[in-house]
Length: 380
Image 1 (spheres, rainbow, N blue to C red):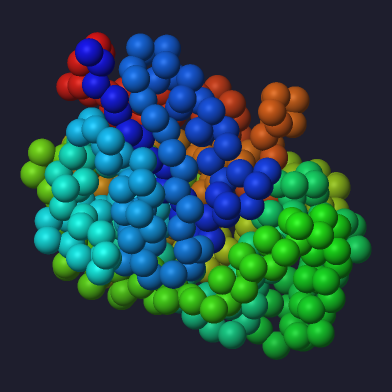
Image 2: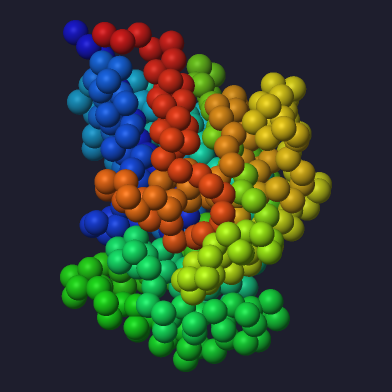
């Protein structure tokens, strides 16, 4: 009799798995399901619905709820794959003695976990979270959330929005050029293009983002230090990480983006968040084991510098456990949001970084993840 494996895909910051056709893990989910089936593995792959910007503890409680609803019927092994903040949720889930819910017991499920994979996760925090603590950062976060959902639904932003937001970003550094009325107008225009039902869902999602932002201070380098002090590895669980590093924005990457106004805007956004993410305090950079260092050097040709990042999370902050693979990719490439519209279904890239990441690298990366999940787990 075959053993049933339960694989959970845990979204990151403002993950929107609950917005119908707006799929956070869409490409990763389909590839991983097919890959495990090709191996002859009886596996259920589940995408988690998390509170978008709630605390790590609340998000881990969301994960526990989903696991209890889908894995209670057997005692099969559990595997957690977390992108970005989802990797921290997965670590807390398996941490011995963790208490995340008043109504559900965590330990019976935590002891069934066999592997934890983190993709582009901020194990040492990210300076971008510090920026989002400010008033301008909070407003920009909600707008970027809406941009992401809009582009994944319609392919690109209207040019009128592109030019108006470009003006906003041009003055963003001094945080004095934005006006609430302009932001309201951008929100209204973008929301107006959704169907009534989808508009209600998106509006509720954005309301959730604004209502509970307790996750943001936890993701600062200082905040994550406290998380790491109270979160411990579980004996018997295999921990692996996928590490991403994108090209620094430059005249070359801007020219490579082309003359299209939308491409130029998204590259401007990328350059802005990259600049914020570069500000990682040297004292907060983690020490790596010789094996981790060797994996990074082999992948990139040299040890990534202290300012290297994927646009959202410092590259060296992403290392945890065994480095399964380290790739040239931005933060969203790893979950399938890169530019390859000819593929069916199409890959849509809303943040043009010039990483060059495409479907072959995506499939190789997720095959490596599948190898790790099933490692030491015999095929029945």
